[in-house]
Length: 414
Image (cartoon, rainbow, N blue to C red):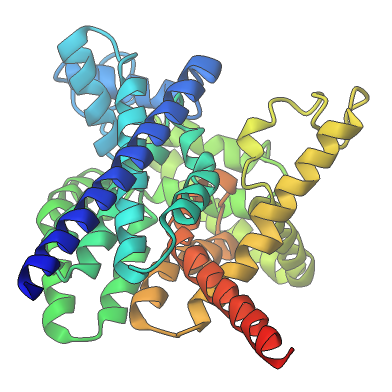
């Protein structure tokens, strides 16, 4: 009888879990489609990705060149252009990429939910799904965007889920794809490898990633004499110490990255860019540091900044057409996505302090570190913020339990 009761309980619980999954997948996909219909389609870095994809589809390699010679490029990783090239080959256009990204976003959110259930199996499903969807809006916004944010988030979230399951080698393979999608993932990979600490796990993770990344590094070394295009590094360093992105030294980088210069001109630019970077830090270290902290602070507060279209819109604090009700909503969103979100994330990180929870905070710590050294804006923080959502749920659970415990004590005392 006891065994029969247990089987019935397991079936009921399984049915409830499937219902949670269906609700999450359905609402998430609906939100993605709504954003597609409302905002489709935007090009964040679309021109360059389109050019790379067209050249790949035509068999001319990963190049930004419009005509011969098709010089190799490494300013953008090969994964996203390859996906675009595949759609161009199959359908004659890249436009279906946006539907693909909506589906990919849905899967990413589902995997995050699986991570939450793994870390907090007793979390209230309704509250968990609500919080997950609320703080995933910043990711959903990029569904109609020709940029790497959606694919990058899916790859990295999958890699971290595999890490939590102890599938280290497969996590390494997915990390390899993520590095080929966005270069900063290399630093995240290295920090995760160090954090694992156990030599066998660390080597397995690195080996899995290198199977995919090594050919890319060899190709770049043959083309540029380095594992990545040095002009890309110089470009991001200069952008990171410029108050605006119309710095002539920053803009000059794109001529070299796209192959419109000789090797001598390219080498001269690299020397000037590195010298300017060191000189600006040496001349005004405090002023530069304050500028970078302010810029990072804005990126953290404007978690939904992508929804605010145009500086002259009614949402803008500086617009002559600003609307007080909309400004109040924007302020509340900034408060929610900034201090409230990070305070509860911190509570989830510290109570209790576990290796699994710290693991999810590594990408955010890496991106904050990169923002101090080079260039990072609010969209580059999308992935690291999404991976903090499980910590937010843990923190919220901890706070709600504590409140319930206090209320129970008060009732008993009375």
